[in-house]
Length: 122
Image (cartoon, rainbow, N blue to C red; front, side, top):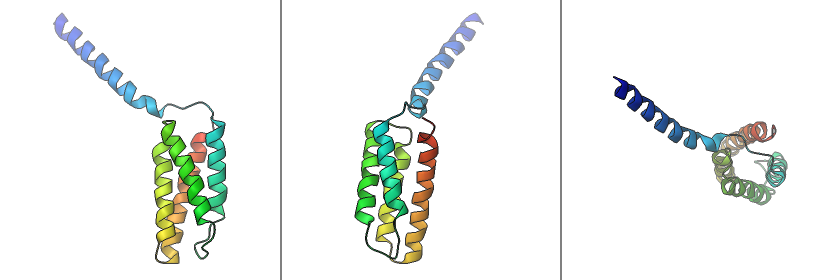
C-alpha cells in the first residue's frame, strides 16, 4: 500500500512538472517598451483604416506584422493572438465587398483590445 501511494505521488509530481512547463508560456511577462510601441503604431494605423478607401492598408499591415513577429520572437503569451490579428487584417484587405471587410476589421479591433488588456497591465 505504501508503494502504491509513493508511486501515485511520484506520477502526480511528474505530470505536474510537465503541466507547469507547458503553462509557463502563459505567465505574465515584464514590460517591453518595444512591444508597446509596436502595438501603439499598429493600433493607430488600424484605427485609421476605412474599407471604402484603399490607402493606409500597407502601413497597417506593416506595423501589425512587426508586432506579430516580435511577439512570436519574444515568446509572448499573446503571440497567437497577434498572428491571428495579422491574418484577419489581410482577410479584410482582400475582402470582395465592404461589409465583409468591415466584419474582419471589427475582429481585428477586438483582438487589439484583448492584446491591450493583456499588455496594458505590465
